[in-house]
Amino acid sequence: MAQKITTFLWFDDQAEQAAEFYVSVFRNGRITGLQRYGEAGPGEAGSVMLVSFELFGQEFRALNGGPEFRFNEAVSLQVDCDDQAEVDRYWELLTADGGAPGPCGWLKDRYGLSWQIVPKRMIELLADPDPERAARATKAMLTMGKLDVAALEAAADGR
Image 1 (cartoon, rainbow, N blue to C red):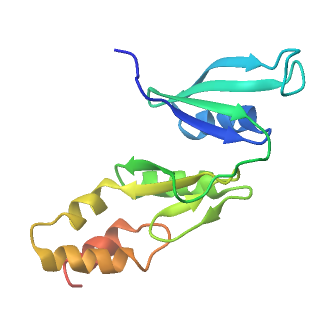
Image 2 (tube, rainbow, N blue to C red):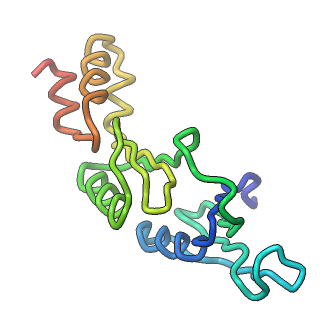
């Protein structure tokens, strides 16, 4: 079954560069289509209008729509990571060259798009059936930028 809902991202004029960056960060990504503005505009004829790409089999569209709209933290993309090495890799790549770290596992990439780089273990700790363990893990998470699995586990254990 084809994907019914597609994430659509509005860029000023960096849609193609952003899509190329994202498919390089997420190794199984690929660009699946490119459309150019025609004579009718509104962009310059021949310039990139829309880039279609996939990350982990999920479809995205990136539009060169002009400077009217900017990304903000009201929308983010969450990456569920299997371990600390995966957290570290995505954190480093997505904050490079103008990206910025944020609190609690959030960051902005060089294009201003917000991401949450989340170890699966954190989700488990926050949902721990023991409310005290979950509270300690939550309290520790709230002090972090990039999430640290070992520190979250230690906090949950009261260490």
